[in-house]
Length: 258
Ligand code: PGA
Image (tube, rainbow, N blue to C red):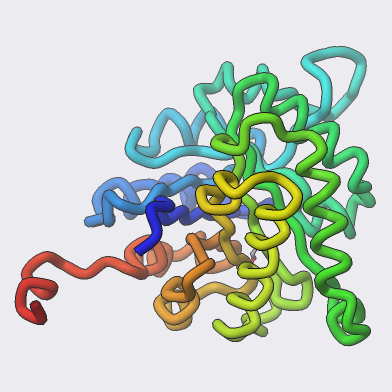
């Protein structure tokens, strides 16, 4: 059994309003949640304060992006210091929509990772190959290069969660099979062992994202190197509770099978 704490992130993306997010927050606050799972909800920027003020303190909140400097003439951007000022502890960086819809480069993502960590935020750093890259057999090359650009900017890995999210699986209902996810996660951990350190390879959480649902989370989450999830669509539904509790075996039950 790994000592890595299971991590489930919700990525609300650009969805919801105070009414629907408030209802979702009430569902989460009143649910029975496995306290061995770390839960973090990624809220739209304008709702960060709202989410942090209303979500129970046992769950974290993440911004979905931030800029690479603390302040200045960068219209429309937000900085880690502002995120922290709202009481928010995490930021999602390098998400495939930032990379492919908004054209963020590995270099910019690396700079953002460095600045967010220096500012004291935890970072959910996302990587993942496109369908044509998988079909061309370049998955490893792509995810290693993306991970390298992140790793070059990390001094303290205890504040980083690496999210492997194959682009072809995001929002498509086409989840990676448990074997496909495990294969890439295992290779990424090996990459960490060679390029960062043994200790980081053993301790860093590598989470999977891409059409995770209440129905597929148990099998995905039981893979050796899958340490949790980053969940988009299903994180907006009560089903998110089932995903948080994917690996939860109630005590009574484990006693029964002993
Ligand atoms: P999805 O999104 O669960 O809707 O596929 C995952 C993500 O983009 O993080």
